[in-house]
Image (cartoon, rainbow, N blue to C red):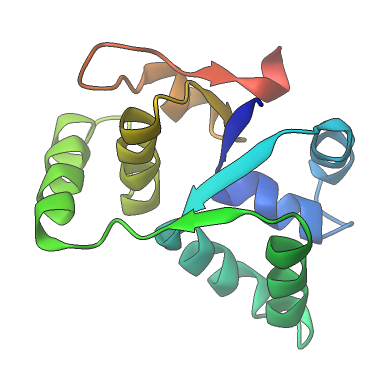
Length: 139
């Protein structure tokens, strides 16, 4: 089964039909029959964006549940240290904490495909093994 990493941008775009990327994201997401994984940092970021709508948080929960998205928590001190190291390495891109946790999850699960709108960042980021990401919206 194919597994994709899920970033904040597509998650928010999928939830918001007014988002300029909604149609492209929805088309790819709805056609996907594999497994989606993300991190608690991505969920936190998405919750912030959707909280402007009274039903946004509930809708986010419903989508995460219906799609059976696996959410990994990478916030223990050793993982935080690894995330900070990545954020320092990519400070010129820049890399935020959610992106850093996705890179760590990609390494841990050996997943190179990511559903993201952050083409600039994830085209530049590499795992510690030097592996690049495959941006599924560009395939």
